[in-house]
Amino acid sequence: MLRLILALVAVMSGPTTQATGLARARHAIDAVAGTISGRVGAAAMVVETGELVMSHGNERFPMQSIVKLPIAMAVLQRIDAGTLKLSEVIHVRKKDMVPSIHSPIRDLSPNGTNLTVRELLRAAIVESDGTASDILLILAPLASVDQMVHTLGADSMKIVATERAMVADPKVQYKNWSTPLAAVKLLRALQQGRSISAPSRVLLTGWLTETTIGANRIKALLPRGTAVAHKAGTDATRGGLTRATNDIGLVTLPNGQHLAIAVFVRDSKATEAQRDRVIARIARAAWDAAPHMARK
Image (cartoon, rainbow, N blue to C red; front, side, top):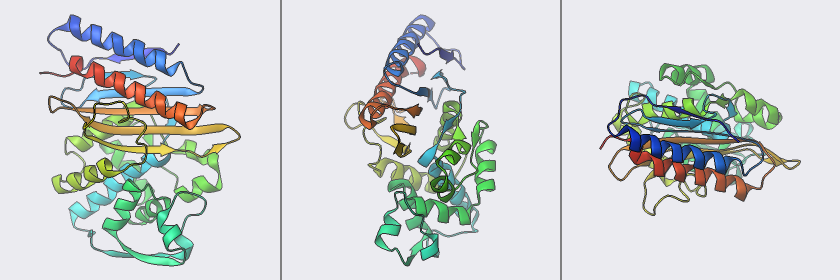
């Protein structure tokens, strides 16, 4: 059984009720995680209070396409600073197209195309386009993205590899890693406006809400109509093994507060449907615990 760590950051009213709710979340997450092969890590935090519940929250998990979120944030920082414009046109050459991964840009224009920065950002977040992600890294290099996440308090997150590098060697994905705790800290910084300007945040969270990739994960078992701004990441299955199945996001709670949640499944031999279901059930457990983590 997984050992769950509960970290309570602020003093709450009704401690008995709160402890009971968090204990239920602990048992629910523990039970769900134990139904699947591989390692499961999760963290959930109410943004406005800092209250936190996590399971293996300080362990490292490969990020896969979740890395596209901090990349987009770093590019938007440059737009906020005036050194880059959303309308700026970028020429994407044939040799820039990343092979063997999900890339609608490559599929539609294999010989090259011209796209605005806005179009590249949207493609990376909404479509999870690998080519778009690597082009954005020309505008905001890897080292600057890595430095940004550390500045925002996501110290246990490392971003050093491109999509192209991960295609060349699937094991490289382990070099782009995050702990569940670092992921929710990054989400909290985004929601609190500590990373990018308000207009940029509206743009980014709109894309995170629009995406249909990972729809069977965090948002699948939440009440219909719940606002979920999220980014999924998935490795290809090779020899029956999937190294990464992830989803992180900001969930709007009924009281208007926000739940930052991150669930990672590492090195699993379960089916995609089983992996998705585990993430969905853990997200639901965090949702059910949220009233006991939030200040009314």
